[in-house]
Image (cartoon, rainbow, N blue to C red):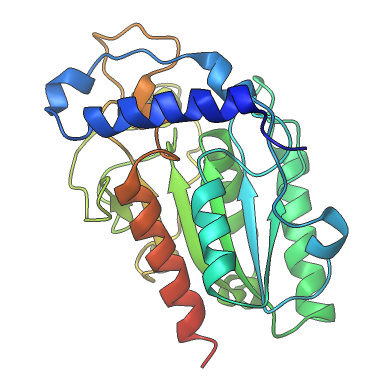
Length: 264
């Protein structure tokens, strides 16, 4: 399925808006509301589903956010396309799961775990880069907490954006430019989990300090950095990762460098 002409026009308008936003002040982004319809635009696969499940030099596994249709997440489409164009032997594999408002990621977690577990047996030299947006970030955090050491070693890069379980103090927390983010803000779901004394899915210390993970949170994304004064149903910052050049560029470079460092 391809994104139609309306989708590209809409993306273009949002891209221009995002570019203007990120050259302005942070204050202007604090309570800017977005259009939830953006997430429901048709999505596309980059690699055919049959080819994506065969052995490859590396697999790019991405988990989309709530209400995004099946396919590569809008937030990762540009960087995944660029990675495949600049490093041969790879495939793109979107996680198959509902991405429903109930936030149940169980089937998606099983999908990813099965792909990596079977890959270790049938394709032992295959490496992985993982991507998670919003609910997809929660999914990937849950996956990482269930994998054994061999599986974790095969994962060379993890890119998270708009993570609702983001917590401060992590080495992997970065800003829009891929620089370490020292903000003390707590993600929306993490804050709720803390208040209800529930478990927070988070990176193990070893993974957090491995240099494999970049956890991006843009100014104005109230999902990973809530603002109680803002009542947006969905903040514009949460919709902008696929449109912000610095995010796309630094994430692309991180994944390429990590995959190439283990390919030589």
